[in-house]
Length: 373
Image (cartoon, rainbow, N blue to C red; front, side, top):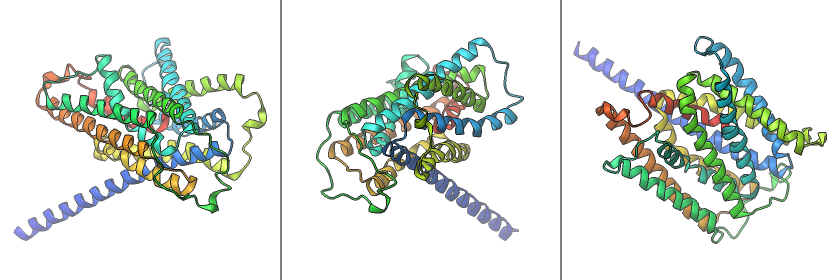
């Protein structure tokens, strides 16, 4: 009997180890898929695809993927739509899709994807600031987790400031560009370092604002896939209205090469489809904090891919700023982790944070970011 017990314990430990390995590989795969999105987006711009056309096609594919799942899986969970809810979805789309994706591509047009990815690491810090300003989250400087989140926010902002104002010296004296992919990424990228950083910061601010503002919406309309789908509908309509005035040349809407088709399909199918499903799986198995901890892996992957595929150069100012942002990210994540522990031990604390279902809202926010980012 003792041997059977030991064998059972051993089998359980082996199964747990395999589960951890699968989760670890899943999170890494997620970060590499999202890193690829930065690269193909920059490649699309290099090939001359219109920013608006790229965004519209991406959101059409995203909506086609999400809408059936939202309709069938959440049939019983969807409350009836009201005018006020539709107005809130319109605002969420304006911030979470139109401003978010628009600022991202404008920033990527002027900036290396490496630094766009690096600056994105400060989204948790910006989200914390906005939640604190709107009193959705309490800033408790009397506790370690409160101090950690404030310190992390300040360090992240400092890192973003360094990237924006100090480009620094190039790290490599030679070009790592692979000649075989020159035809796929041909073009003359226009770099305006400061302007690109400002646009990416606008993207991060929009992204954070969307995550904060969706909390009350999810409480009233607790169907996360339907919320994302309806947000995509309004965002697509907003971009189509903008395109009607700015992209009157119909030839701009034609996909002219296999490279352009690949970038559009990757953005829609892989970044908003496969990566979205993988992110849900990772968060369900490991939690939102575990998944967020691996975000800097994406930045490293983007740096390597951008150097090899796009021939991007790294600069000392960007590296220093990126390191500071990652340090700030881990301070904020550690503070959130400690806050969750304190909240579980002190139920009264939950009243001053995001409410009793704050944890669920956090998870809903995390699983939505792949589609809208």
